Image (cartoon, rainbow, N blue to C red; front, side, top):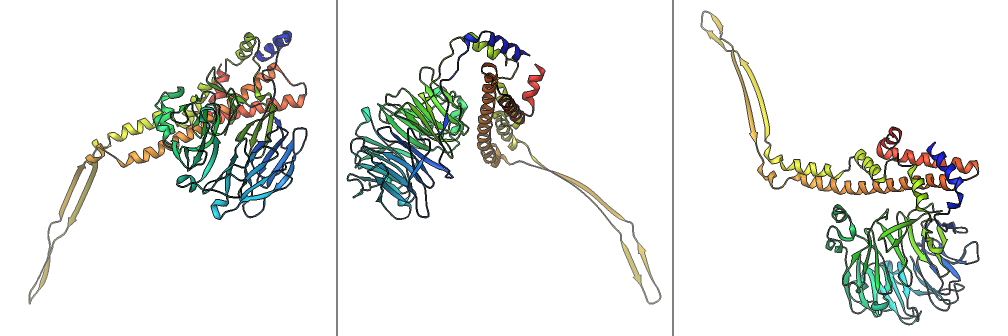
Length: 524
């Protein structure tokens, strides 16, 4: 009844109504049926988009409605892992079976790099903006560089030439004249020839961030230290470096000498696969396992750009030259005009009225607490175990025993005339014993501590998964509820579809909280 009353009120004041977002994601997958997508890029003149898949490379003009295949992968290992579009129609593609290039927008191709075994598995490629013949190629077993379009290749000495290279970026602004390379899960800074280089960020760098950095909870940093730290992508724009990791987004304004962590508020999943930054550094987009997010510098929080996107695990995000934002998922490609910039609601009072309809429902923090308690993954549980195991050495091991027995005595006499025997009295024995023993070494260290540490790590991972799932279901449900009030569909099938989806999400939250979510709503 409250919702219906609010709806009538809002319709009566239709002048206040406006859309909360200017645009939504559009599915641009038409024409692609490959089992997995790996990469996406745009031509330098902004007239075409390229998509690398498990079977080859596809091209789509801005006015086209479908993709056209312009390169087919061959051999045992197939897939276009990364794309670099250069000047004057140059296209370079890193594949699982070598490196190829085209100088006529993909009409003809030439193999530019061939190696043995793991070196032939190419991962990442980039070229100089003004000189497309200078190419940097990252493979499964080292970095390679050419200055003549692939005729001659140079392999750096040391770790850069002998370990997996995941991402490469050319410095800009104060970082111009340097290359930044993620190699063997470490970030290295080198000269343009990759001859002199040094590590500027490593997998152990998270330890340098003290609790409280970037407005993170005290326990967040300690929990992150227990999980493998992965460096996924490096980007450079203006004077700043942006490093995407599975523990959030990091930045550096001094060429990697010092680092700061972007605040994680609003980022539903901290696993950042890719980061895209506009030329002036004003717009920052993160492709995560939980969707696409845009960073708001003035508020130091992330806004999710979700409308129209069904897939959540986003591999790559790209800012197009025609004011379009592109998102690459495992089996979907999406585009959005205007970069997903939100249009603020003009009347704050209207938003308050709408949200008042849900004040009888649990807040997101209350729902998270319900889910954590139901799954018994709260930190106090581990603290209690550790506190209890300290007293183990003070408690003795107790052995108690009881024994009893009996025996009979018989004497036999014989002689030449007669024989007889005598039965003596029965002997009974009874006893008991009580033994107490202490292992005082448990006061210093107990083997149970190792078991608790393992359980603690698993509990942290499970709690993160539960929190992510609760976040996703809770806010998708709330968005659908708000949409029914502010912009209800006219067609009955769409209304039913929306309401059934709300019921489905409510059931998901009930499953995560042991039906406590619905019980609180009913009680209120």
